[in-house]
Image 1 (cartoon, rainbow, N blue to C red):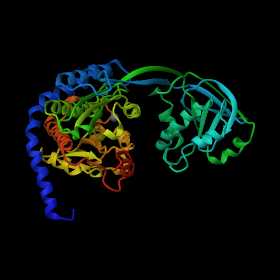
Image 2 (image 1 turned 180 degrees about the vertical axis):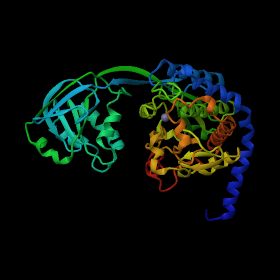
Image 3 (image 1 turned 30 degrees about the vertical axis):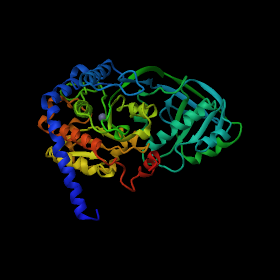
Image 4 (image 1 turned 30 degrees about the horizontal axis):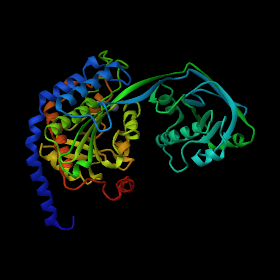
Length: 487
Ligand SMILES: [Zn+2]
């Protein structure tokens, strides 16, 4: 800041604002409320809130009931608190043979089935990276489309996975019978990929009709020559696999803002409410992965904000969203952003909460704290409850792009993630992270009271601030944000 007096005045005004709002927080946030929410959501009775499970639906009903109790309404354009999310469970194939241009390949050793999967046969169309243009040029109707993973610019398998969704839907639209992508990455060796992708999966079921068969194949570009020759054919036989469609739920609530103009700007408060369900027993024989930290705590940050803002509405409007299927690959948030009840440009900020665990009760860790202009406000709100706000301690882990907030960020909406204090991925985190030990009674509720209070105060201050928060100049998502809001 150039002018130090101006800077000091600005900070002072934020401090005064924080003090004025603080009383409203202590009226709704207290330990007994926190304990009862987390105690229920992370109880053994909810069996770890797997997607799908009847217990996850019970959690959704619980959240809905709290919205009703608080006086939170349904969002415009929605006739219920539930946004139905079409999903499918995919049971992995146990055996399979892929034949391409005369050579035979076997399941797992050479290829993985990512989606679809029935016996088929047809001519091969080789389309380089399989961009829309490549696919249109390739006359792919009735053919097995063979392409390279990615788009030629990024080297990250996670990004390849994202990019392949577009290829798949375009190939399907053009009448292809399968998409085979050639995988060759030093970042994630094939054996690791096999471990991740040959398990049973859950995915979105947003497309119409049966899914296109989608294969990743362990080949390097050197092997292409044979495939690119004309009049080649291929075939696939698989067994053991199956698909079942089901519907899961995002829970969505709304409180209208009080300011004539600012109420048209919506702040989103979000968290995922699912966890990983029942799994391998730990040393004590416990098989229920309760998910108290991950993410009953995040769910309760949003519930705490909902109760408070319903009682004392802010100038900007509030949209509360609890996502399903985060642990299965950020599915609920993906569906929400693709089918959101409000236009993206109306959502000016997304304040997400996701939690792996904590190892420092003097801080709150905000992934992306310094990446939006609301960073000072969040720091001040934390200070009001004796917590220091700290940014991402492990940027190399790229946590910002690994939780539901990234669905908003990639559209240009500023979206940090508020989480419990952690300074490193150490033993203390590992003891509970995705473990049966992540139970409600292992939490420090004195800390949580401060933590939830700091979150709700941050929400109030962001939603009442004169200036609309935005990305800090130069951020990775700054330009797409400018486009979204016509800034
Ligand atoms: Zn998790």
